[in-house]
Figure (spheres, helix red, strand yellow):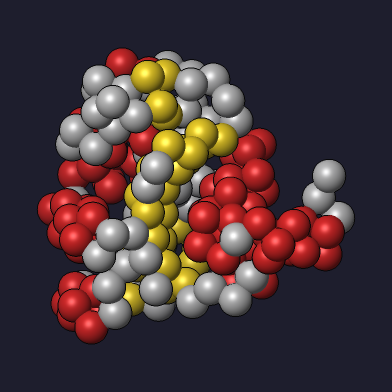
Amino acid sequence: MVYVLLADGFEEVEAICPIDVLRRGGCEVKTVGVTGPVATGSHGISVSCDLAGKKAFSAIKGDPPEMLILPGGMPGTRHLDAWAGTDTFIEATEKAGGFLAAICAAPSVLGKRGKLKGKAASCYPGFEEDLKDARVSYDDVTVDGKVITARGAGCAMKFGLALLRALRGEDVSRKIAEAVIYR
């Protein structure tokens, strides 16, 4: 299962584009409402989340994360950072041997928790200081083992395809890229 944490103020394209790409590629994806059952993005687009509250925590026990995705945006990233459940989802993902993925400002959430130590990681310009003990990368998307990070909204499709490649392989990722006419 892939879980995407959505908090009010999330960057819509950084969440929806990877969700779409992963679902097209055959991955099961659940959105988790951090600030409630409906999350409203930084540009006013509201998303009804698949899970919220206690249901979210029981879901990861029964269906461990093969990937956790943290979209950026403000103040969404601050909400992710402040929510205690973020730590629960990160720990469950690591315990299951899954991937941690974050885009834009959200890699800072992983960095503050020491999850980028010794890893190469990308982020939105200005958040480099929060990538504690990481090797800062200025690539659009950076894959380092089980950590996948990206710079921002303009990289959302490339990010989504990298996530799909990590979970389902190069052939599936290439097939979806061709289907959506991504060059």
